[in-house]
Amino acid sequence: MPRATNGPASRNRRRRVLFKTKGFRGNRSRLFRYAKDALFKAQTWAYRDRKNRKRTFRNLWIARINAGTRNLGVSYSRFMEGLRSVNVNLDRKTLSEMAIADPKLFEELVAQSKHALEAKAKKLAAAKASA
Image (cartoon, rainbow, N blue to C red; front, top):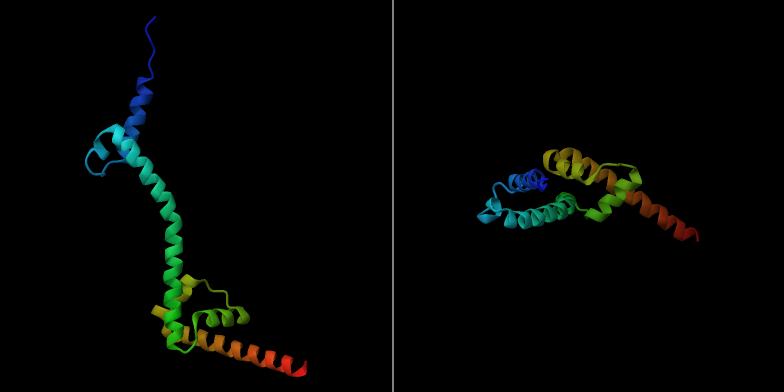
């Protein structure tokens, strides 16, 4: 009885790895031994960077909102506090786009936020005075 090998499965596995590493430089795209390691690292970094991309974009949106609000005389954190007290539930991505594309509407939101902060400050001052 002839010896049975796992040739077809091994060949398919190698072909699959080499297909995924197409476009890598040098031996990393041509030789299985090096392609295997390159693919492992590439997939590891891809997983990590999918998480980092979310973090980076959030930082960008916050910076844009902060720039827009500082021009109108309020800081980012106070602006967000005012929006929360007015129950405006817009995410940072939308607010960032609004600050760039529609400054008039963004200005109205900042005005609402400022008004809510002033009302909150008056309420606190009244509470302190009565206590």
